[in-house]
Length: 292
Length: 289
Image (cartoon, rainbow over all chains, first blue to last red; front, side, top):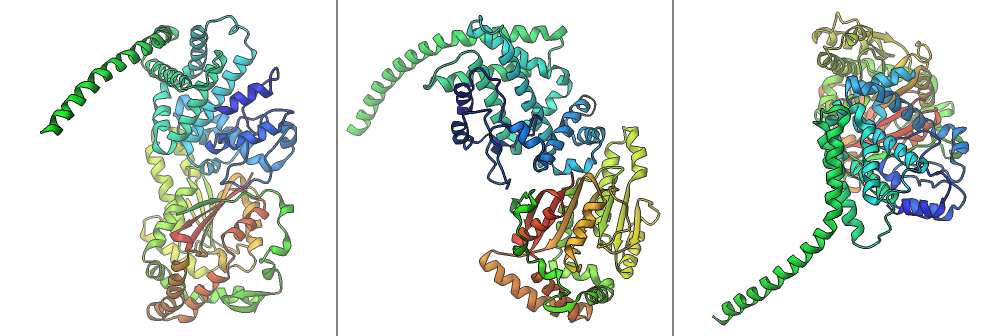
């Protein structure tokens, strides 16, 4: 999460990219977004932030500075580029074949690479889903960076708009989205999908102009995470034209959440009062027991 | 089972001085713990396998307590076969790996029966079993008949040398070599040939007995290898020498990291290896891009 804060500080004005290889969307490996990325970004004032190599894979360089030009000529990173191309092509087959190996095999054939490459993805279907999530996040960031329409909105409107934009990217795949959700919920894949969603929520909050740095930070992320997930699931069963009901649902949830702040405050007072009452009666009870 | 990744993509970084495979460049090579002339090695290996062919599978079961079946299952699951695949199994004499791949593809096909495209693809699947030793191939063909795969035109039995394959460039989706690569005279040639015949996106997988580093287990394993196995060979197959050669050749084979760097040298990317049973067996994999 700190990465995005550092990004904003260092790259004011420039276009911001997620740390990744050349210009090509790459597969997320969870370790690429580890916090060890921080020291490098701080020391690198010139350009886009970089990612450090993961501890398990031995790569001879972690790119710095001019990432696109340097790595594109370099065959070292090639297999990841090819894997990304295969995944990109596979997305077009997902609607017909689901988030499955068959879709990836079809994608590989489309790109002209032997479908054996599918065996080299560590968690096959999960790699495809994670690629898609990463891709959507990048597109969202592009929209945020380019769109001026977010400037004059209140936080709640901004959040509504961003969540809506993000969920609309999933709309074409909605018939197969339950499968993607179940893949993401699989124990092997949970940690990566959790990280991806956390990053997404973080980006949305930053775009909405959030500056908090105390406990509220977690509360806000959790609340927005809840809104996003419930809307996503609502969308699965929505059959209204252009998901009108979903956006209505989203709007209501966002409004509730913003009222929630005051509700939390009142809930705190209530808890204190109850605690005080409970405490004194508990003391009395314990005292009586001990006297016996 | 520990999974370790090694990716080396810059050849400059690998110093040739460190390459213990240079031992194999010289005109002498190793046959177990003996040093023999290169020309002789393949003959001697040929003799070994002609001797063991008929009892090969039985001895495998004895020596590994049946585990070799699981290891081969793991190898095939890492491969992820698909209908229409062209696969080459080298040194696959008795057909264990090839049968597993075929069965895996057929089961996928049954699941995807709704998709008419796959039916046509199924016809195109070809698994080539290549072995230098005709006796081993004959045993394999008989086993295929027993399993009811005798008429299956997906299986093709080819006699050939792993160092000089008769297949065309960029023609194979997958290449496997199970328990075969420690018997070759020139490992680098085999790796280069593997790289040549694979298509872009094709995968190289090697299942081989490898080095154990875990302290106590290593001693137990050495004891088992040098005391039990030749004796077992003597009793079951009537051939102590061949099994003595077997355990010696395992020790002479490069360790996991070294072998992985040799694979990377041949041009493969994303070179990884996975240790099974603490290093008794290792599956190395590489991707051709």
